[in-house]
Length: 419
Image 1 (cartoon, rainbow, N blue to C red):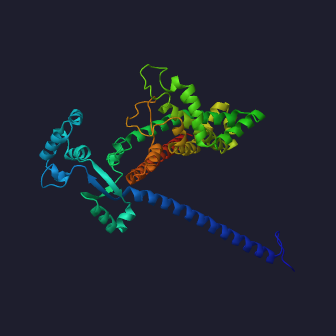
Image 2 (image 1 turned 45 degrees about the vertical axis):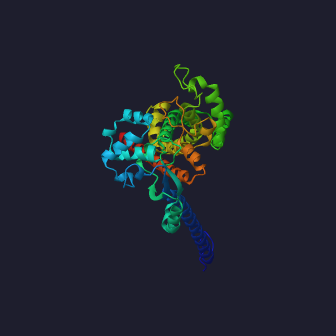
Image 3 (image 1 turned 90 degrees about the vertical axis):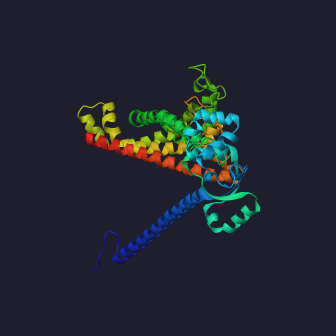
């Protein structure tokens, strides 16, 4: 008597299972290959950036240290008394007054004095730079280049230093830093979060929990999905027309005080933050809706069963359960906003500014804009500081995301304990 099963004869079942196993193994190999390829590209990208942060640099001083103090070829070899004497003698009167006003020479550390002399007296100029790999493999070529340029010297330089983080912008790549751009990015993200998070979550709650399934709301939902895919430069044009021009009295601060930066003309941190807020708003709405959909209806029915109102159910039951997913979507949206350049350039963000932003009505620049501006310059040293700024931006993203994830987990854990 033949053995039959629900799937056919035994031979057919074995053949079907073997075929399905082969397909599963094939797709598993494809997925593993795609993952390895993605990781490989990320490693190559990160290594190419880090390669430009470290390496040899050939510089030539406008004034040699030996002409300041005889028999000493390095400023680091100067004694403290010699450093103070050289600064007092060779600094211009205007720079010396400014330096002494900020902090007297006698109260400065040896490191500060060396930096002053190098910046204002020696005035080193970068002749050429090499990346880490080139520095390890082309040492003879580097030495030959230095020998061909009289009075030049080779130094191994790390472009990502604490001084780079706290220095302002400069036309000299050896003195340039990202402090102004870093503060501008933090201000922009802060305004973006304040604007987009409450509006986005509120809109998602209405659309998911209150809105009826009618034609108007379906059209509204469709437009939100479409807006999430609109190129960011379109939002820049919208921000230029609405926030910079139409709302200039508000975004420039002239509506509140007569003491404003007239050169900003609405091209301020407030305009930038609102523009990026519009950019990430559809993303936050969609992510929040998906988080609310994931909450089982049985939880809502249980709350209604004990007499809770709709708003009480949402506030005390639905939101605590979905807050971790909502914050995850917000984190991803803000990460996108932190890396945006096109909309901020359109609304008039400065590409070179050395004055730190002091409020929401200040002119600004951001790290991505500064990286773009440095990368576009032909001098090799600017590519090195652009790579250092990229690493700083990645570290900022990592810190911001880690802090947000930690806060999200703490809030979710607290809500679960309270429930």
